[in-house]
Length: 276
Image (cartoon, rainbow, N blue to C red; front, side, top):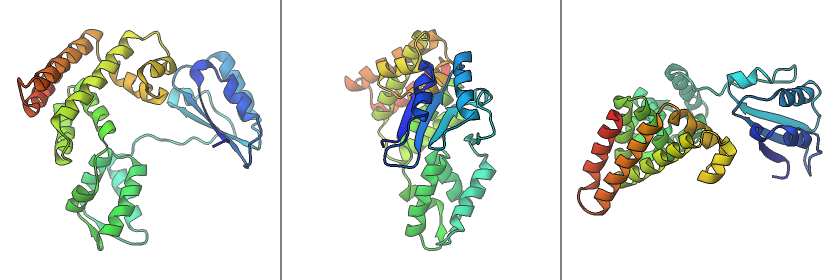
């Protein structure tokens, strides 16, 4: 869209503020999305405060940031939106609320749990899947309905798997693997994705001096994806990451050369990654 622009505070906020003061094209508002994933400089804080204290009537600033950065973005015109994950009870209540709207549909407790696991509790995905489930089911959504109709998000599941391994949470790691198996994901695909994820995390730790946007360009990722990847990679030492990459690469070669099958290779990969 002509009237939606995205910036990162990593390169300063001058361009973002300048765009906020530009009239929209064939529309009522110009929307500027500013990603704030690092500490703001005093100059940037001053520039943002000036806009927040006297915002243009034709522009909207959307700041993606954590709680610490939000402290620098206060003002009468600011609306804080908490995007933190809901608790299990809160999520269940929201799902039942959606099901109570027309067309009304009951949903079993097991279906709620399965839906949350397969969507990783992402509300936008849950709303979309519930619309589909309500059209498919007649009056009640069961766990079997969710298993048959909802596909687990692959990329996010890989993120969850690496996060669980980083915390040595074996129970969660094997729960995620079980979801992959239920959806017919081949073991070799999981090994390949794990190898790619760990290789990128190693690059992130070796390139600590690089900014998120610079590293994103080198790794062909978005700045936001790099930010979340770095949250996981920061829990590893460089030595642990290198050993993990070497382990996955060796198992990958074993499968491709026919020395072992992909299922046993993935099982060994999980145990070795949890022990490294």
